[in-house]
Length: 402
Image (cartoon, rainbow, N blue to C red):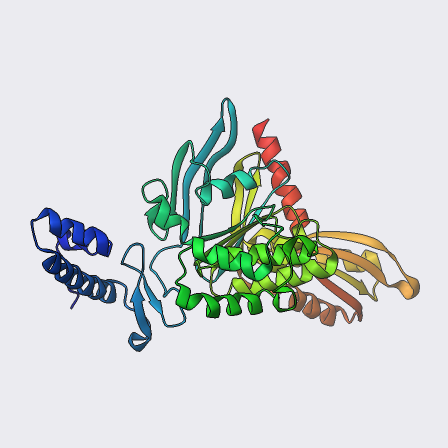
């Protein structure tokens, strides 16, 4: 049976301890009574959280969300699962005078998910991230962080977000350790927990060798790592990265991508990029922006058409005159293109096949060739690339605008 709380209790359990004591003082209670009142409400807060958002392992329950009193943490300091997305953008629009930078932008990001904002330079990616992190307000629409409205509760919302802008906010004269210790203080990490938290960040971001070095003397790759580490200070559940690999050499790019992939296991990660391989290697979902509008939003597999279209290139020991009509008779084949005749009467063909609904074009092709007694000399398979999907989607949007 689910225990229901009255509305007044739902309101009270979301107050902070100092707010509870102030509330009690307004009711003309003594200081000791106020503190007792605060303790009682803290217990109710714990009870409310446990019933409405039960942890997977009750023994792992440690303490209550410092901002809202609703979300439980476990002993490792990470967030327990919630029933809604960590980030929700709802029809966000941004205008600068008569210029519309974003139009009805909507998407979500959940824990354990990496969402990529893909678009050309000037598509609105950085504007979207600035609004998402509370750096600037939208002209219209809402940004919800863990169910809270960014405009109504900016401070608790921002405390749940770690942000790496395109240019990391670093102090060149400080050491890596000193800078991260400074950021931990700004983010409210308890002094008793700071040393252990820094050790964890240093290890995760690969900064052990440069921990005591001055930031101004670091390479761009290490500076980017320090920027990611500052975004992780306080262990926020949402990580936002703006073009995190711009200007890095190939080795540094690989290292930063691996770090982002690791972060995506425990956080909701949102990052922007105009680099197609980066999106393709890292993201679970893609939000395609073009001229401030979302023109497509789906999983990476859906974006590349992996579930719908397969391209097969085959060399078959059969003359084209006999082979092509047989290939066109296959229900899964949409298009057949001859790439040329080879020695011994073999034919090189390119097939565009329908792979929707669990169809397996390769199996149908094998059965056909067995019936024709035609040896298959070679077979290559590929799906639509993200580059092709990107160009096709932007071209379709340009046509619709005209």
